[in-house]
Image (cartoon, helix red, strand yellow):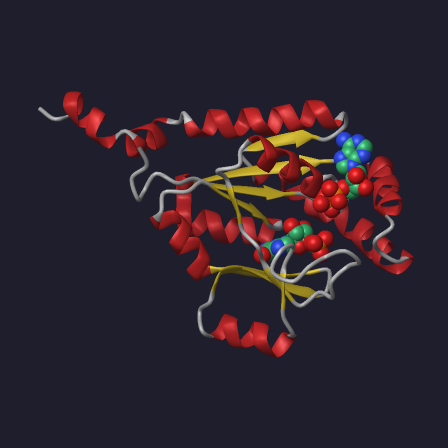
Length: 209
Ligand code: ADP
Ligand code: 5GP
């Protein structure tokens, strides 16, 4: 049984191209009850990206309006674009006791940590090397050369923040990394704070005097 306070926020961060989207897709296939936050962004959609599915694509004026109205639980400027997580959506999911996945950068992860403390589990995905990261970014063929160069230049700075996460996964072999991500989710759910919130009535049987 879920109580309103039993949900966990799984915050997954990585430099662009490390495989975060791929790993999260596999995770959601294994764990369909996880709810994935769809961020707002001022970035233009890539080929194949749909509004409301991959992102809520907004222009800068609308993003700023939402931000000023307190509509984002966290927001950041990444690679020259704004990104933010809807406060309303998050509150609804947490009230329902859902476990939530946020795919956000380290700046956003810091803000969520400040707001949610131990309810957040931070997971950082690292590529096996900078060379492999470059190859993955080019291989994905979704960005032009200038965009790829900008993302590669930013990667080292982002990877420096891996140490702030609770868990780090090296995404070399996809099947291994995918199993590791799933194991982290399962372990995090067994933390005492989550078990106590989830099974509050049972814990009361032996915790009350
Ligand atoms: P991100 O969401 O972190 O930017 P993606 O999930 O889009 O990264 O992955 C970048 C590219 O690398 C994609 O083409 C993806 O198929 C590929 N990729 C991801 N993980 C692996 C892996 N373990 N081995 C080989 N290729 C991978
Ligand atoms: P992309 O443009 O490749 O989809 O994402 C670029 C970066 O923005 C990634 O590091 C991604 O995690 C981050 N990002 C996506 N959504 C959000 C968000 O809502 N908040 C923050 N802080 N970062 C985000």
